[in-house]
Image 1: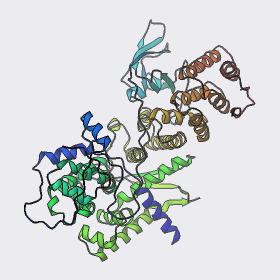
Image 2 (image 1 turned 180 degrees about the vertical axis):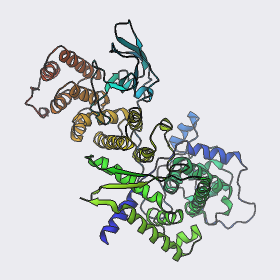
Image 3 (image 1 turned 30 degrees about the vertical axis):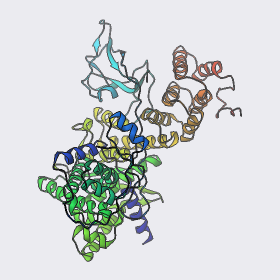
Image 4 (image 1 turned 90 degrees about the horizontal axis):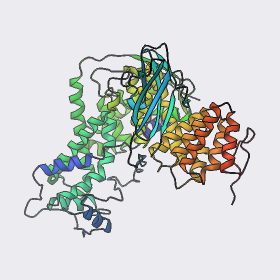
Length: 190
Length: 186
Length: 210
């Protein structure tokens, strides 16, 4: 019986974890709200049980106003049940904020007997046909030049549509998830 | 349209402001309840697109029918009831659109996966199991064990009797127990 | 309480099920049906934990491109998700996506969560993405993991990112020319931080000066 309760407790724990909601949803909701008629209390005596609160503009609000951003700063969460507030969702990791300028990176491989070679990796969604390589001078060297924004990319060469080959001139990864390891290229600038 | 710091403003106060014509104050209520309600919608409907649709729907309806909220200090609870309804409607619509259902068996053998990977596997399994529940039982389970409502509150929101709700929760618990019983202890 | 699933038998509803719809646009039409549900669930968990999604999607796409089985794809994505979580916990909740991703690579190369936490403490005001990536790259050319960790930590307080990259490039070149990885590393590190010997015998960085 205890085991069963522990299992269900674990289930509840997992289900109580916060869910990431699209931050743009608030804006879409308010747009739809404003698109319709403004809701007002009917004129005449209404039995409200609320005391009017004093509205104040916080210093933050003043700044936001200056920036032209409509925002409501909400620092606390009131849960409509008087229980402990649920934990705030962990802050999402932030992408690098530097302005990315792509660098041109040339990939080269020696494959004299190959009929086709393509470059496949993180930067082209591992699409086998997105980045075909071209034979350079007829001596078995294939190459392609690709613009890459700063970052770290895993990739491999696909020879004749069936053989995956790592780049002998690049560091390899430790990902043995799908057989032979890939290569990795780091493009600086971020 | 003003910018206001709504910290400490109760639901009732914000509702009052909206009804006085300050539509922007509704954004404060949206912000206050979006995550909590969004979690329920996500658990109930299982995918982000439907959850966000239900959420948006509920908030907009909440605004349009705000005058009918008889206890503005409990706006959150009232809005939650609207959301539960929207989720039912959305769930029903989707179920009717389903045509063929293909069943497949996938056996996952557990090779060496790191501890954290196991946590992810457990989460997936739990969410999958919850998705298998019939929607009425899933709804009751979520309201009871995730939203932690009392049966009285659940009756208010769903319109079902307390005994029916207790039955649904019990069935959900049994089904989850059954589905998750392949999980083996160390 | 630790629960370890042994064999999990799943029933999947494929056509028309809201749970089988891929949430991630890049995965639409790419994954085998049996992987879709699980990968979506992993992505959803990762999102709710604030972990970077892109590396997970990349891993799934790699598996699809290499025509791996659904099971293999799910295992790979799940494993990476675990590593991202460990990296993020070690590096702190305010880490950037790049740092967490690079941290996961370092873990795969043999660093531990403690190593990453130590790196964070030594280098609190700068990005750790390059340092962690260089750690993984050093191991990739044959430097033993604990030696690479020691080297990266020894430089953590003072080295710029460009120095880390130069270290890596120089070691790679020396190894390509025939030097042993450890000696190649030792020569380069001594030039930067003459505090200790980073030959095969060291396993932890030297104690920091108070």
